Image (cartoon, rainbow, N blue to C red; front, side, top):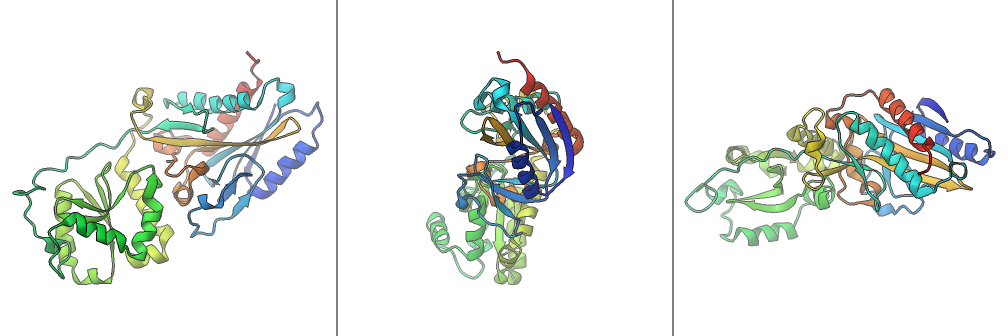
Length: 365
């Protein structure tokens, strides 16, 4: 089996070359693995649903392909390994091939202290991330505790006593900026985290709140320029109770959505602070947040395969927040760097290709 290192190449001509190679194969043609990297591109599987592309503010190209699966993202820092393979000659089927490809990633990760696993109903390779350290919210949110009045939320008028009722009204009358952010974080779409909107915490109503991280996201309109002191006091009180507050201007949300999401993404990642090379013991399945580190999509034509594996090494994960990765809303995506494993893209790609060659060539049991 030949391993070819292609470097950074455009997606479309590489796909065309894979098809041409497959169509020209003879029974004696040697199998090949192509290792490469792509410029940013979204690819849709043959049955891909367009609604899984949630937004595309950076106008990243979207290419409809002939592989299986739904939408995914390829970009710098991701190792692509294309599997040009003769299934007939190998003597096993597609399901066995998928298992062997997944196992190559699992073996490589295990060599760096990361436990990983595949899923029968969702091809690819997954890991479990350590949960961020929970921070105590402190005391004094109820009656008899923090007695700060409702003017800290809205200095222009006295709010109703029924905060939950008022929060429901605010949800029903969301601003355009709130509606946009909600579409990007709802259903665990942002790093697998659960957010609530117009959520009451003690005597406050927060635009968006993630209990897991004790994180509040606040969107400010022009009126907030006139109440800077109120907002600062409110933020100070929330942070004293262990809640981190991130603020964005409505105008920035609407006109620079990608920049806002990148900033939010980076700041959340810095809060989670994964430990270097976490041990397999920390990744006992079912105990921590799950994330996908490798996606798999294949095309089989006349007993021969092409397309293959995308392995996240050290990349900007922001574009994944613009899609339902592999068709799954809220699926979190990770990369080696987040797991504390420092490998260059070339080393990771070639190491994976070597392990794939071993796995694919192993005798059928």
